[in-house]
Image (cartoon, helix red, strand yellow):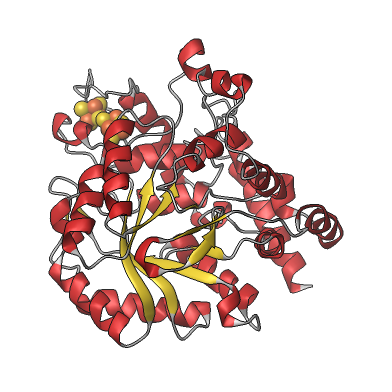
Length: 415
Ligand code: SF4
Ligand code: SF4
């Protein structure tokens, strides 16, 4: 009964959001995929359809020795526990979450799902971050070891676990941050205490530098990195990942499907199966964590791991944006724009929020990301022309003005 009334309230709030001034563009993203909100009967049907055991190929995650199916699940946007249960039933074992996802509800949901399962039947990775400075790519002085340890203890409680398998420093963009002493000392301590089996860093900007620094550190066991067919620096990525794999560092790939859509209007989806196959054909990727919100996405991803060679049609699909002049929603987070902007706006985070809104239809994640940015209500309005020249060709000003409107929506409308 309680669940029903909560759902009813959310539905009412979402309907109310249509009436908010300036939000005419958002109805399609406020209405989440119906499968993510299925009632119990259809969830059972979907679970039965998807959750048959798959013989998933495995690879070893570097020196951790963990043998993982090449398909894992990125749970950042997963809000339907039935999808996660179906993934586990299908043979996926590694679930990737973070302290910050869904303001803690993501870790709590995962804790409920793994409760009672044998501890060696699943692998949990989580991430903790601290406040950072976009100009330097470094953490600020508020990012202390005490803060990191406290956040991690909260994560363990939410997950209902004594330990996690991998604990990452979240969102690293500079080599100096890979060995940021306050975080590194606490990671090593937690590893010694058995609260995490392995440690690592995650990166979705300046990835080759971060991967190489993790190797040189000889401390990090795993790197979770963005990797997809849309990255303009694929050669550097491939070389850095090869060096890491050779040195025994485990490589986990994220952002594998590059924002899911080619266009803001969501009329041209990226061929998700082809994009995932493209990632997994690289043997230095030990496992991939595509985000999965729906049963359909889970099913598509499961079908991608049976055979990696791309068909001629799939190769053409991956060039669709190029052919049609569509720039896509994926921002490579290179940070080039930050110093070009007179107001030093944290543009990479804003572009990530834009992708969460129009690619993932996840306004809550977009709002969470945007709240880390000190943004005036009308960013960019005082600039007659934008001085930012994005190498991916984005209309940065237009995208910021577009996505900034979600600041006006209360969190309750989108959670
Ligand atoms: S908006 Fe463009 S310049 Fe800025 S981080 Fe993204 S890809 Fe790089
Ligand atoms: S329009 Fe926006 S992004 Fe461009 S320079 Fe001005 S404040 Fe920066």
